[in-house]
Image (tube, rainbow, N blue to C red):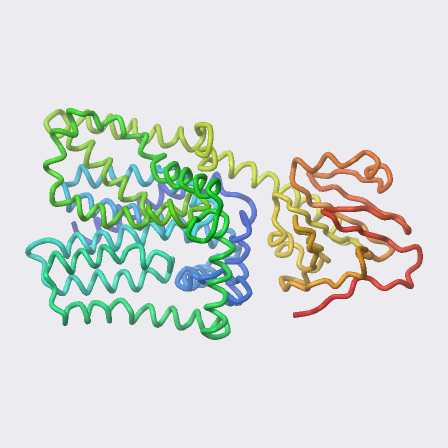
Length: 511
């Protein structure tokens, strides 16, 4: 196809992505990670979680370039996600076309375009959409390199593609290396080819990795960040990091649901007769699909998959499998049958996104986006109405709206964070300040107005506390004007407004 034809196709896919995502976009940065990336637009420093480790340097670079054209960070990330979805869909189309013809490419592209997880990622955490981009690009390069007529230099292109694009999602590098190894083994690469391909992969990694390490404050600090981040993320869910069996089983369930939820759209194709007829024709693809899918799936199952869109590294492989099964089943019938089957698959994907099934599948739905967006927007609106009041203090205790979001939208306000463990600390702008409390009391200045940010189940504040503090609720935020001498408890911490202004508030230890 000519370049103009590809540009037209890309424009059509991008238009569909924007049309199906833009009306559903949250009005504010969706969650904790979104704020991290917004802060990185001005100051790239993984050491301050701007963004969180491992840093995602190429996504930050792309976002900064888009930020030159688009002002609001919310719009920057939406545009970045729309571009990623477009590229991933086109790459999967091309891979399906080269494997089994245009029909397979079209169906695979449709299955990915309307996959609930890709849809969800484009609205909530757009950096993870680039998992699908990296996955499809490396798989396409690897398939081309596996063709008998392909020159050995194609091995270098696989390595270069993997090395460059992993800068968007560094964790994808080790999980897609098996594709590179498969190409080298199947092509009987000489040791010189292994060395050159390794150099092609390592060179770009050294560039974006080196920039990330420097921005983080050096190699020692960066490695410490990675260890700390891995322990925090994996300790509750991975047996390899000491997680309890219940946590590991829940993660395994998540990996299965997030990966195979979209397969409901085509799983009916796998009938005994269909498999018996189709399976022999897959002989040349089995190792390719296994090297593409299994490493990422095993990582999700055994190490970490906290959110649905972290499975986007492996979901494109399942979309391709589903497309090839559907086209194989209908290849001897009328084309209208395949078109009808593809239309049904798209419709089921839409239904799964807007009307999810019970259980863990509910977390891959627009209802989650609606709930969080409604909570964040009402909270920000309520606090904004009191923004000009000098004594306003935001007191956060495990609310659905994260303290990171509050610190971003209200950087000038005093924000006190009470963790579930009882630890308490403050934020000044976006920098954390530890608090050294005298005994068990945390002193608040006279004239303080408190905005309580609590989880929805915790809004049933005790009637006695409600009366004593004069608590009133606005948009999901509980406001109070504690009088001198007031005392209240939250998360094991005792807060006191002294009778006289002579007492000093809690001492801040700046870092």
